[in-house]
Length: 396
Image (cartoon, rainbow, N blue to C red):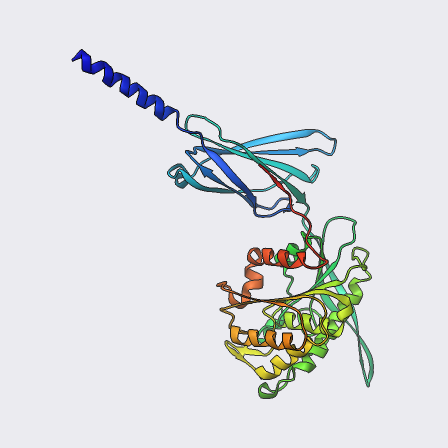
């Protein structure tokens, strides 16, 4: 028996030792959902792992205004789905709340297994910026007619970076609800505007005549459904946007040496294209989210051929690059119609890129899918003179 007992014991010891020498966990591909990040607001940190993970750690390194470097470490217990799988991704929420520190942070992450062994570490630099400054403004507007000149004011909301610098301007144009009573609501597009602000823009969201608290009568009626006059609508919305641009160019935080970026959703997309066609010298680019006019009920648009004709004619004079972002489930301007509008625009000389997305948000994609369209906008702006600010380079 002794002859067999010793080999079995030796084999058991070797097996235990080999198990104890399992490779330590490895991590890779550190990612930040936002960069820059906004002070006091949550963002997502994620990375991939391979191996056994019991805990993960984050080290936040920052410099005080007095030049003192400080480090803070926080640990988290791994969730069951992470502990039970030897490969996957870890993601968690984080926010920076120290508003007195200098703007840049070094965030470092690593993991430990059940024996306390540490993985490799990943680090990346993020910029922390204060939330956008928000201001309600009254935009003066002069309406000329055969009866004289009438003065009125449009309401608007301005979002801008919290610094004393000058930034290029984005005019963000709203749409038109099917229910006229809904026009009384004031639209601010806070989340969407901040997406542009963190890329280095000043954003104004003007409420055109007949909307919100703006003065003046609603001026965008297109007439009878079977003979809609969309050229007339275009002439009217151009007046409101022109008043907005002239007002904003007088503000000390707007860079008047840069052309304006026009953006809009639904009728706001139509309006952005209309303004760019009337003032091509002022516009750097147009971002058209589900643009159109005349949707009276799901999948019904008044005088489609007339709409296609008007939008197509915008292409005769627009010289700025444009991007048209629509979705397959849009019941205001379905794919067949949106494609025909774009094709007409291109045939008349307009430059642009058409995207048809499969988002479940449909016509509400601009409002509900901000995180989905931000990368699309980044790619588009790189090809213009309004490229976004550089994001941090991750360090392995």
